[in-house]
Image (cartoon, rainbow, N blue to C red; front, top):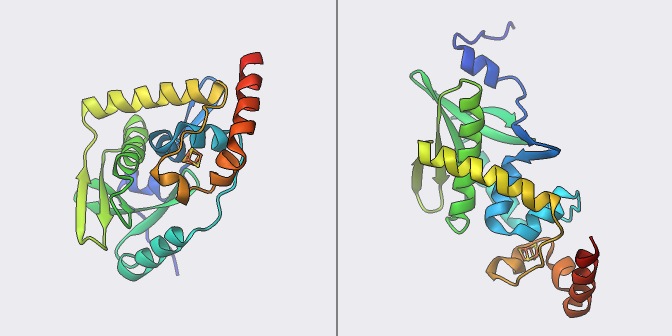
Length: 203
Ligand code: SF4
């Protein structure tokens, strides 16, 4: 069967495999990095150096289940930044949807979605974002206003500086217990971090 052709140029572009990335000098900025920047600078730095310890956690599995249960049939799908992004078309606009299980990482999730909206806007695609919290029965609409654009650009600049700098020393926080880097950050931490500090001082 012949595939239905999209009438809208923006949508047809989205249906291709878009890789949302912005380059700041040698640094590749992606939505995941924007998210990590708002979660933990150490995490951002480790991830950017391809030190990847992320396994599929329970929360990722729950997220997938939520997606399959509630949204699979409603949204179209595009790959942005190596991850699946859902979107629907409302009139002439696109809505980019992210499904979250809780609002715990609200600021990071919002910043990531704003980065995608910023990325799309730079390519002439007008879109709004929606954060969906099915377990809370809530949705939150995200619009990219000039202030958000400025803060996204600031995020991009800060991420570039962090990634090019030395490793930010880990600071224990609430989310560490759920982070895949916890063992790396805090196993024998006093000795290792003193060593890391010495290494940083010589860089
Ligand atoms: S364990 Fe904590 S300090 Fe280390 S990367 Fe994860 S969130 Fe950051």
